[in-house]
Image (cartoon, rainbow, N blue to C red; front, side):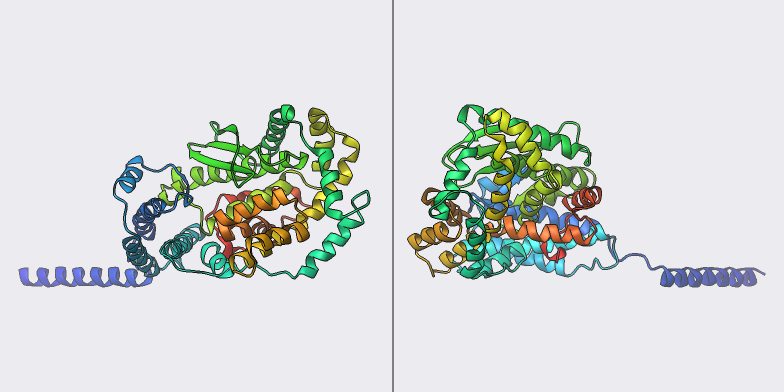
Length: 442
């Protein structure tokens, strides 16, 4: 009897095991938790970025992760060769993972880490002496191939400006004279910028929920190669600096308020911190490597954010009705000023061409200055500042214009066209609160 019962029990156990195996075949258990593996890789990535930062003071643009990681990186400066070896090993670990069947945000995270790490390896090689052309560097760092433009392209835009800007004489001199009508007096600068920031903030908050404690500190600085900078500090706080060496024309107020603040860099970093660092514990977003694909998204959304916040004629109206009176400027020329600024913006790719030819050795320093004066219609002083920026940041310059164009095209493909401002805001918010990178925009 016992033998019979034992046999029956054995058969039941065998059947149970077979059923369980069959169920596992239909619904196999995951071989690993992708998110947990990415968490470990992300920690190593952050420490590598901090290590590169000990060799390149411009590389770490923002960091609000564990202080002990930074302290250790500073105390134990790793050789570039060791950093590269570690980065290659980490890249191999990322390549071994498969995110194809995961939710989209996890797929984007996987790709984000791969692209950011790839750019880090190239940055280490460049710091070690490797030479890249302008286009090679742009592709390696920013995940895009910048377009090239002939001199004739800029000549056509200059001809259009020639028929728009009032007065007689050389077009560059007329533009400089016209723009000086909109120079913000030094004693009005802070009032104008704070009014612009307040308006950008109010417009943004109507469409994007921001952390209750978000804020910024505004500083005026000198002797910088850039016009404005956002230093994100974590905990939804930023330091926004404005370089007063550059002439403060009227358009700079909204440009910098929106670009550096709302809905630009400050909002972008706040949302990444909220959505990923705080909610998901993704430590890679506690650090921002400047020479990386993330910069094209950051600069592109910051520039396109100006149009998102001020669609159609709303910018002209705000500059005319609010900023001009605060600055004590003639509001009757605001419409012509806006038209001229739109045309001048089309010349921004001339800066890229100057950088390409200069960095590739086709132009000397003086030739690059003269080219910027002729085709970007800059004053010699401004052309020198632009070249100072190119010397310091090299191909980074593409992130402003090409970044804006790619972001705009992507958002419009999602339905966020100019005639649908609410949809535009929705798609803009989705983009700046995601790990999507340049290759994902094309």
